[in-house]
Image (cartoon, rainbow, N blue to C red; front, side):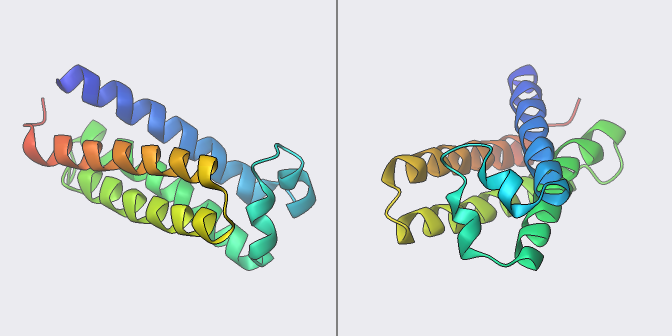
Length: 126
């Protein structure tokens, strides 16, 4: 189980680090052109987008660094809980925009983060 938890943690952290970095570095137009699912950026200001990118990047770091370094490993499941709440907000945005299929993807991510939080809270760190 520990290996599975690590693999899912690393994949999720890599995805969120990439997403957060692209939000921080790319302009709104460039980010919107990255795919047809990115029109949600029109609902937010530039400052909000930078904050969302920072939250994604800090969350990704929080998933890996505490448990990998052994310093305050309880922060890893706390980061997973925070990212689950973040995805609940993303699903709410998709709901408001009537993007049902994309909302389902956000709910899957939410479930992944709930699983990670449960796993890191309940399993001993080895």
